[in-house]
Length: 230
Image (cartoon, rainbow, N blue to C red):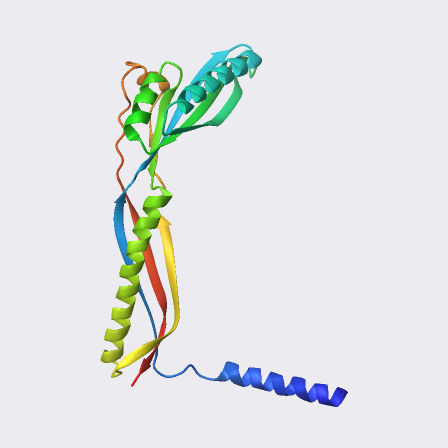
């Protein structure tokens, strides 16, 4: 039994070694294709912030928390707008001798919406409590999937055309697909637009905040190999 098992293992090893040493079949072609488009961003992300300074960190924390909750509550009453808390920090400031002279606090709220007009108006209404510190834009999942669906058709078509054209150039009449991969590379992350100090945005607290999105690039690529046929 031991001799039979050893012979079986040796035979299997020989087959594996033989398969690994076999050259790739003739007429195999590796190639790739991709389709790219620019899609208007349809989601806006606004970062609102409030800052406060004082002698007691506990009082600063309490006041900022109250203001943050008030802003979030008002934002959530606006149809089509999502709101959540962002960063919250309390840190000391020291004098030239290294002693704590005062405390500074900062609280953020993140607004997200596909209704640019609604969130612009809301940000203006909230400016007396929190000011806009940054704006970023992104692509919704629905818009991304719709774009990727069209691009996949284009990329696959381009892959097939390249395979057929290359096969003829190499003297073959047709081809069959050996392996193929479709990759959705996603989209470029939203690029934030940062504002200066909060005071710069407080000149007209009732005015809507200018919100205008741009475009982002979506890419789908196809790569693989084909067996060219005579």
